[in-house]
Length: 421
Image 1 (cartoon, rainbow, N blue to C red):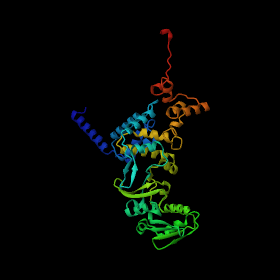
Image 2 (cartoon, rainbow, N blue to C red):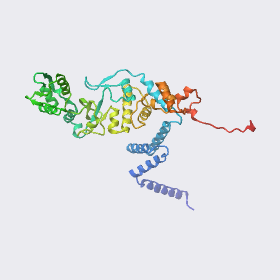
Image 3 (cartoon, one colour):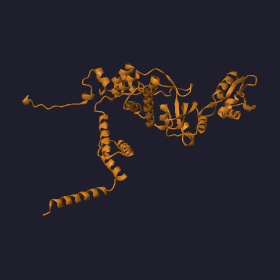
């Protein structure tokens, strides 16, 4: 029979073997960690959509968390995602309208914000928010933020060269004076040599632009470096004046619609960006040195025409969010996304008004409650429309209860046992 001492010795030997085995265990590889994270996330595939799962995997992997931390983060994400899901029957439209409308009453009516130089302004605040939801065809102050690629984004001189190519230069911009010579039926253009040098054009460029005039009858003569004479060949004085007005806006170089440019250094990204007054997205994106992936305009309709309806939706969200943030107003982005979804639902940008969303509702009474009541009712009667009373406004009008919203959306049938009553 083994002694007590022998038993203790045997136990110590086993302990040493266990410790040694533990020490010799292979360390976890990066593939093992990836597999562990992926398996944890995939357990919640029924709850989390694919794009959220992918982003969660990338973020967790990037921060090199421990297993306990990974589990904790994933559980927290699932909990927050569940909390963010909209309950069936929730009045999301009304909540969004109140959530955006109430903070908007605190907005200042300040229209302009200067962006770097005194003559450069951007419409902000309530006027800009109204422009967006009204789907105004052209913003009152169209602005482009043009991002650069290659050497230009780090080199100011190259950025300035691109800015010069973009900025529209007309004959009026480089002229000291444009007068009519009634004796010879000619238009004399006195050029500003300093402006010619600054804009990178010559008198010959002015002459070329004059030769491009549609239906031109006369001839163009360059007299020195700062004088161009256009013999119109027209003897009607009123026509002569109209030709002069037309000459003022003739393009010499640059992109139509962009009247001014400013090159500034953005410290947050460490590169030069061109801010342009005016907008012509299609033309700017085709320029060499311009990063078409990041370049943007505040003209939503132009974004839709060039990049499509999904890009227009993203532009509406960005523009509304930036206006509210600039005013220091905290509005949940989901409310803004709902407005953008409603505005772009049909594949075109519609305003939130009687010519758009409100005027195209399926409910006759809802349309009539908004504006031009008689016309909506008369047109609906002529077409024999029916109102299914599914919305809030129409149910309030007819006094129907309960409104099919929230708890009122539930239809409950109960079976009674009358023998026991």
